[in-house]
Amino acid sequence: MILHFIFLISLTGWAQDIESLLQELPFPSRIDMDQLQSKSVTQQRNNLQTTKQLEKVTVGLQGNYQQLGLAKGLGKNYEQVAAGVSIKHKSEMGKVLAQVIQVGSSSDKIFRDGRDNFINATTIYKPEEKWVYLLSYSNNRSFLNNVPLPGFIYLKDMERKKVSMYGFPFINIIRTSSNEAFGFRYTTFLPFNHRARIYFYGLKHVYLFLHYEQWVQNYFDSDRTERQERFFYTYKNASVGLEKSFGPIFKFDVQFGNGFDRKTFFSRRFSRERRSVQRFKDEIYGSLNLKLLF
Image (cartoon, rainbow, N blue to C red; front, side):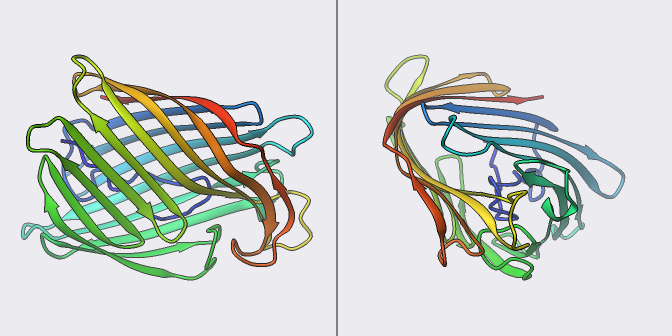
């Protein structure tokens, strides 16, 4: 089973998927393509990641593109483009030390102004089998910008049917029933972001699932008068979907659901002094998500 270690480097559209930093994966490269469409909002995320094992270290490269599109009359369109590199060293005793750096631009006019650029840097240290320690810096989070943020993860269970990863700011729980009739996955990036999915494995060739998501995206706005002010988009989604895998290398899922409690606003901090708050009506949406490993 391929485990995805997703850490809170930045909450700007959700920055990076850090894989192969804590374990060896059977496939060195990965492509993710996600598209969501409703009447008022379009969301897109494309991610390319590859790793190369050298003599003493593993080097990873990543490119990421993200877009938030608002219907005419509702606001601007925002984009994020980023590139990153990771370096991992694993000692003969099994200790892992990794560094991840990502730079890019996140705005309605990307790369037009240096103040719209961002940098995220995270150090990951795994001194023993069960514990992982993190130290993360970012100038574009939804909270505590320009502050080094420590974190930790306790790897309680790492089995095929049972995964338990508890810590700050990341929690990941995966369960599969003993008869493999259904499964459950919950992931959170504290304090604002949560995803949960219940799988039903009764169908022969596809998996049926129920999905819930509560998430925050934030971007710089090119017209802002305060350097630290950001544009925020928050939403909740509830959907039903089907997931299909073609062996271990290709997977896709389709979802249809309801987007609700959606709003945009400008603020220096996510939870304080919001201005120009705009609320969206509840809407039906559809989404397509593709994943390719090679």
